[in-house]
Every structure is written in C-alpha cells, then in structure tokens.
Image (cartoon, rainbow, N blue to C red; front, side, top):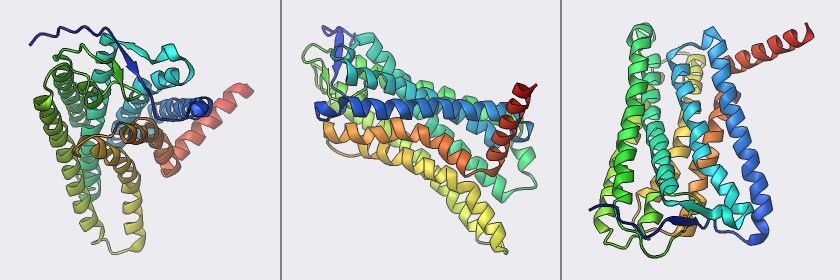
Length: 311
C-alpha cells in the first residue's frame, strides 16, 4: 500500500494536566533538559581529555551519553513548545515521521548498548586478566557500530509500518511526541496487523535485550559471591550498581507502555516521561556521583581550567 494521506499536520495534545500547570511544568522540564544536555556533554568532555578513562567501559559510556543527549532532544523541546504556545502543538506529517524514526532509532540503539555494556561488565569482573585482550579497541568499535546499525534498521522498519497507512480522519495525537501506538489510532484502516507486528517487534527486542542483561548480571553475581573478601565483593557490586539502576529505569517504563494489552493515553503520557526525560538525566547523575574515577577526572578538569584562567 502506498502512503496516500490527507493529513498534512498532526496536533500533539501533550501531557494531560491542568492549564494552570503550563508554566511550572515548562520550568521543570526546561531545567531537566538543560541539566541533561550539560551533564552528558560534560561526561563526553571529561572522558575525551582524560587518558585514564580511555577504557572499554568509558568508551561505551561516551556512546550512551551521546545517545541520551539526543534522545532527550528529540522529544523534550517539542514538549516545551506545546506547554507555552497553542501553535507549538502542531507538527507536520514528515516532521512527525522523522521524530518517530529518531526516537526509535536512539531508543533501540540504547537498548542494544545497555546489553553490550552488561557483557562488558561481565568480562571485566569474570575475566580480569584476559579482559584487555578480549575487549580490544577494534572489538569495542565493532560492538558499538553494530548497536547503531541494528537500531537504525529496527527504527526504519517501525517507521515504515506506521506511516504506510492512510491518515484521513482526526489529526490529534494523544501524546507529547510522535510514537507508534497513539499514531496508529488515527489511521483510516485496520491496524490490528500493525499493532501485532509492533508488539512482537518491540517485544522481541526489549525482552531479548533484558534477558541477556539479566543473564550477564546473574553470572556476575555468582562470580562476586565467590570473592573471599568483603571489600572485594563491595567493589565489584559498586562497579555494576550504576548500570543496573539506569537499566531498570529505562526498561521498566518502556515495557509498561509497549508490552501490555490495551493503551490508556493519559497513563502512557505520564509514564513516558520517565524514560524520555528522566532516564537521560540519570546517566550523568549516576555515573558521576557514584564513580570515583569520573569524579577525579572532573576535579582534574576543573583544576586545570582554574589554572589556565589564573594565568
């Protein structure tokens, strides 16, 4: 079927809330967005200038920071526009298509990247002596490239499925960004097949990645329990704690929205805030506040900047 659509513009209805909350919500989300962008940029800067952080773990962290920065940028600025201007709710058909593609591209890439990062932690803890050779620079680059390419293909498939349908009725999307479930509700055709494919497609990817992550961490925990000293066990657990926190915050809300029967627009909109707005902020917060190496690197960068200004 070719994409013959009478709808040229969609209207994003935004997050369900009382009109009186427009300004407070705008301020809150603006602050979160600025902190997210600045925080992730800071991580990218620190890792790039500190040679001690040029390791596989931080290589993948730079990829995660880059994704989170743009993942937030894909949705939050448009959401802010819907809060301050009635005209800001409008989004063209092709812009909506681009937003959906970018959202699923970055989201699925992040999903694959979390899986790779869990595998990296498994190798680092289980095979410390062979870790450097097992996770060479070439292998890290190959794994990272694979996550980006796979995410791109997955998103293209998702976008094609959604926008191959005709849209000729209501143009009001009950969400604050263009996502497949609320858009499919506006199609002038039977969407049951699409909904099943979307459910299976996202379900297989999400469940598969989450299963591999759980498997990696079960193996890690089994290895940690064999460590004789409590200090060694504590250090190993601390290494993985940050990753686990971010993973749960990312997969939990996503699974709630995409892997359950039925859909409640108001609930989905609120839950989506967690993984589109809050999770990208968690990356710089969790990884910098809980990681001694990053905090040392931040302090070093700060001291060097103060020294340069004093000269």
